[in-house]
Length: 127
Image (cartoon, rainbow, N blue to C red; front, side, top):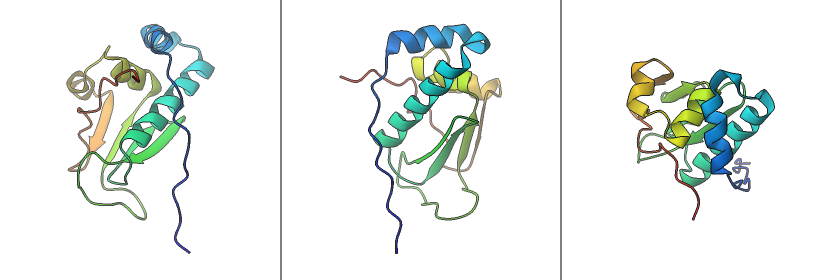
């Protein structure tokens, strides 16, 4: 029987809270940080469904998404992986850090031909 994707409700994001949390950096509350990262990853996956690239924010979240018509990952280690920490994810999402700067400072590790997620960041508040 083929598997079906799990449908999750995309959570509303409090952008003022996210900005404040991102500004706290490593001093941010771990529970709030986990909740924020999971909400951001859920939103990104809902807006860009697919299985071309895996976005990992250990230990809080890992989601698969697609930005273009790249290959579809089915089993094993995905060929396109982006990994970052929670503080960097928040900084990217809120625009406090650019994708280029995050890559240059090695705060984001990306491998694979379809691992450029620069078009995603910063995320925009829902309308």
